[in-house]
Length: 378
Ligand SMILES: Cc1cc2nc3c(=O)[nH]c(=O)nc-3n(C[C@H](O)[C@H](O)[C@H](O)COP(=O)(O)OP(=O)(O)OC[C@H]3O[C@@H](n4cnc5c(N)ncnc54)[C@H](O)[C@@H]3O)c2cc1C
Image 1 (cartoon, protein in one colour):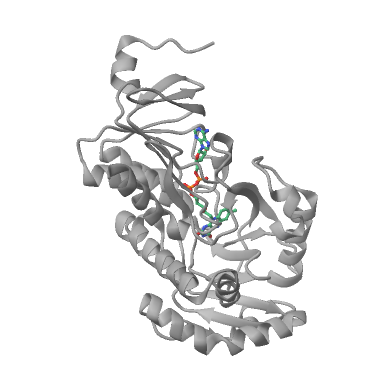
Image 2 (cartoon, helix red, strand yellow):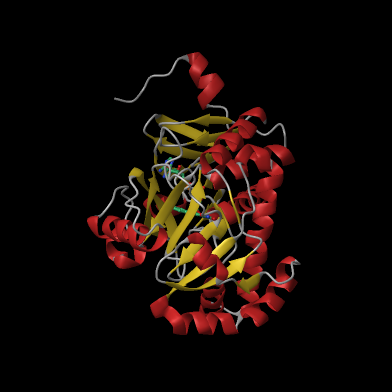
């Protein structure tokens, strides 16, 4: 049954928006913040279907990263050197903006550095990545102004006690943060700027009316002059013409590991697997490439295939012989596509979208949100 709202609820909460943002992930909230920064009197309402943000922003691994050597090579092959370096610069600036907006202390940001690891049977891949370090360092220095970003660091392998790892490439500028604290701090900031965020409200369609847009939702109808769609992986549910393919990421966190030495962020298998330290534990995720079709889903959950592989790598490679117990399993849904850049555009008159962060939204999300806010304000 459709909810019946009081006069007070309608006038104070519901009929109050110049702009409605659909989705309270990092992109939606960053857009809200930017709108209020630019126009403090604008009435901005965020509608979120989950109890918490329910996509990727509170489910990710919290890597503050802008690409490993093999990811840079793959981006160059998929587009061009220029476009790949524009993306690196965008991610780098996005991370700086996130840190400026929220403050390192509030999000537990630490620059412990990142490593790309190559297993012993990936010697050829390691060799070809290592050969390109010099060239990439030159390109990236131009893109983000930092020298000598990547360097071989095989000594790290013995130090960390890994098994079966043959080579490691270090990136001193890679960081990590606490994803939950990031989103909570952002939410507080958004509230303080005067934005209303309502949860438990799922939008099923939008209708173009004469002077406004109606949103048909699980809580009745809302209207606004403009709408921003920040639903990332779920964009196709409302606008199938937006080519965003969902990709589920499955993640575990171990119980505390006594004497854990490992510190920093780690990637292997072309970025399909990633792990890091958090509170004396290991966070480990990935394995989407084991069965792309099964992971191309809007459903949260797990598969035995991915879980088993993650547990095997954990026990055989990362913490060999320690039989570490696992405390948490969860999954989140990312939005992918054929191109390496996000989609920020007007989808219909006065409906703007900012979607498809390609699994890199911690880095890009703050700027993607700002970009769509600017577009909506034009
Ligand atoms: C397991 C995992 C690990 C990751 N690790 C990293 C990392 O280490 N570094 C990095 O840079 N990126 C990482 N990412 C990617 C990053 O988290 C995302 O790119 C980013 O959070 C996307 O933000 P968003 O706001 O666009 O989307 P989301 O956070 O998904 O937000 C979209 C919101 O829209 C809501 N919504 C959807 N449909 C509707 C509807 N019809 N009505 C109302 N609300 C709706 C959803 O509930 C959701 O809250 C990871 C992602 C996952 C899943």
